[in-house]
Image (cartoon, rainbow, N blue to C red; front, side, top):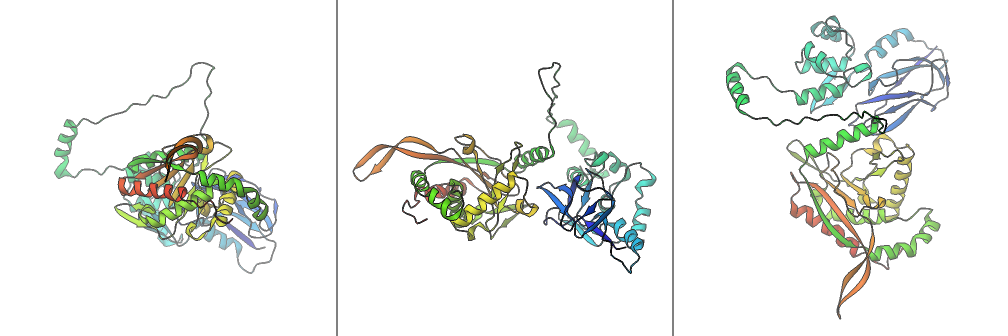
Length: 448
């Protein structure tokens, strides 16, 4: 019988591994082609892996909560067809290696993972963890350790976040990044002198454990942990500055009220303020392209396409940021369809991994929850994020050729947080003012 390998699919350039969160099918179950076999989660989004063939699931190579690299075989399916090849021999070669001839990129370096042949045998002889440790380490982790000169004792000391405290690729890369280099013999005495005379600030955080029954301890779910790490990292990476402007959006409010029913009837789409504001933001980014950048080390990456991330609240209380790719190419109808589609699928956990990747600028609507304004945290590695406040009617001074008048206007605050490492106050302020100008100059006679 022919054995088909079900592999962990590639889910974008920046996604190298995924966690198995649930096996939908068990060993012995019959599976139809394109039927979901397993549910997985990356640091971007949850997803499903369908079967590539019709057949019977005969082997699962990983358990739930295991972290699996892209390209690895996770299950074997018998499609019931005759095969001229020696299936057992193929499985012993392909399944055991899992990372055949793939390049794993990390920290701007590459590690070449080759077939498990004499090369892997040599690697195990030089760095045989199993002989000196009871812990299990994947070939990828062992290879990274060998490349970086990490000893077995150091590897054993790393706290793993994987299943059964297994050390994952992410764990060892974090360890490498935070590793303090050892001083050479020539500067040991100087280093000791500096340490003795330098007062290092220390912060002691005490965990509060309730001693009564009036409190409940809730474990963070996987997504909340990821959000926590991402937000904390952003505050430590970027020099956050926030600028504010109040914009008169009366013409937009009146135009939408006049046309929303007609738009729904004709396009079968709800017309919200979001795509109208997105349109103004895209125009401003075209005017100030240095807002549409990322930072990589000491280099600035200037993006040609405008990929707008839209922060979306989920029913669980968590947050996800689907991305409208090449937003500069879309008109108001195209933006409306993209906004509605991504928001709907985000709330129903139907987003694809590539749909939450490669954003270049993010917009979050804090006004949808009643907030007048906010100070959003930058979505790394971007350099700016715009928060939309609640639209409110206010008494305002209206300038006319006959003098100033007091009238009721619909206004909203726009808040732009930007990375002061690469975006100065002049650029941040000018960009934010340009967004406001486009909103205030909206044509109330615009054709639908």
